[in-house]
Image (cartoon, rainbow, N blue to C red; front, side, top):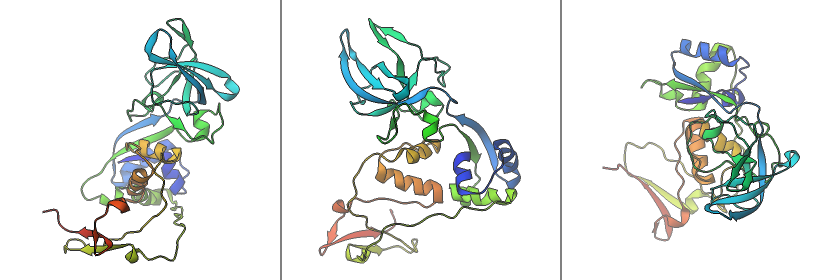
Length: 287
């Protein structure tokens, strides 16, 4: 169970240092397997907006991107990333940045074309999460913003080895509930507000429980959903938890699972089978 101390502090009133928290966790009967840092400190990893992207004249696998890095000026970046498009905002490491692998970003010449930076992936800024894609940032973030001024990329992660009898700690709320007492702290109330309407779920879909092993099955119908990338704050928390961001639908179910230890699943309403004109979900044993 990977525990982000930044996330832990947000859902509790714990004010102690990282060292004090790490020292006291084992006293609650929770074994710490490892501790690691994410991020690469205060360096010039900034938000860059791709203004143009053209093929390299002498290498068909490379592209020349003009990137607006705000107060840092416009930079020319040579990349092989086909997924980067014009108008995308991407985290960009500028000249002099020392990446997590120890390499320093330097202005370089690629067959006569100068490159003044590098589009970074999660792994290059200190995360164990591996992805060939760069880190895309929301359009609302100002060009040139330092990466750690956007969100807490710099964090401490504690990997807690849970025994079979500590299922209550398979989620951030459970971990927080267990740890807060040692620091005389409280949980911050969770905000469950959401927009409701007068329609009834049972008018939209019928749920049949056909096994005694399931005591309760709850569901809701959410309409007018647009599938798109999750907001960056949610992607960051999932990556810290070791979970790959997919899209807003998949990510919110994984996020609730990790935060509240509450498994969820999202169904495509249009693909549910209908019985007598009504969508139906059947809960039964697999075997």
